Image 1 (spheres, each protein chain N blue to C red):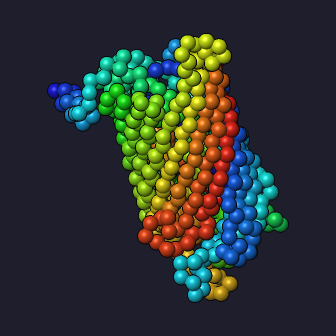
Image 2 (tube, chains in turn purple, yellow; image 1 turned 180 degrees about the vertical axis):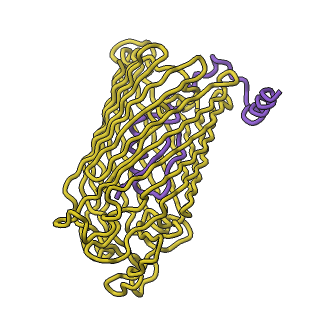
Image 3 (cartoon, rainbow over the protein chains, first blue to last red; image 1 turned 90 degrees about the vertical axis):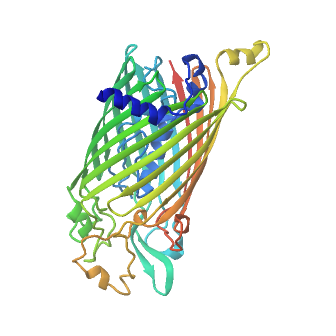
Length: 70
Length: 421
């Protein structure tokens, strides 16, 4: 019962208004332009620079950490 | 000077296609990047003493991804930095000039180095994956060790993806001594920090949802707990008994973020939109919004003949991705600019203060960051380049006229190659 309730809630939360996308219709979603992060090393250096300049960090798919930057 | 970051969960999650990440890569990838980073000089009229030359940094980055079999992948990522420059020690008010600020700068440092290396391993299941990474960052006055575990699962016919991760780090401070003062006798900020440790634990959770054949959205939440010596040892006036940078020894940082990727079939391009709201127990809150246009130009010929036809067969093309990012934050509760200590030292002789910092990174300010990323790929090779510039100021932080000369503007240029094999 509990599992069914959780499943129903998840469907309502995330799938309301969504179209049923068949696997063969997902080609555009798999294109390089659609990646959440198109270049891992670029993501690393940019995170490092902004982390050393700003009073806040985190919130991406990566977890941040401490810094002694000047 | 310390320039350090802890990178934990990124290696596994960063390069994922939007549709689903629970698919094991089937090719090895080797990458290299060279970055030239240069900060704008501090304005001379805003400096009491010290160097106006801010940091110049050369950064070499390496990355290797190696599938072991169809379900197991290992990765290695490293960075080597060589840097020199000066940074603010103390920032004060300017007598008779409201909204102005002036800095005591350090001398220009000799060239210093930092390196980090992170190794990761990830196992892919039918509808999910689980991975771990360990890493270290080392420099002459700072060291860090970290470990992370993260995973994800695809549900609802792979239309929904749920991610989660936890990372931990342990850092040790060993501040550089002022010339002729190896025991930090005349530098109480450094003396207080010597040998101190801090720890960090981060949790992240995220949900990604396919909305239709051209649109995907994501929501993330994260929380980080920091504990230990969180003050900056270099924010002091050496040789004095003045108050130095003293911050609370705990900090809880929370983020909520959302993102979308919208494919535009007519243009063969994608719009990227990301927003993050952040708040912490030091009183800082921030908003970050980033927009990008990822344009792809594929080599296409009518008959597939000739040299261009060969390029087409190899899947060659050009990617151009301009981006703009706006950031603004409020000040930490203990951020404070006092009088110039040479004029009125009373504030700095108050040893009962339990928290104080004039570090511009804890002030109210904002920044605009623009850049362009390009990539030319031919077969298994790709050449990539990025230019990236940021301008920061107090007034960009919204609803303030106070200047923040301690947050420098910068320019970065990056070049590199990727090879799949």
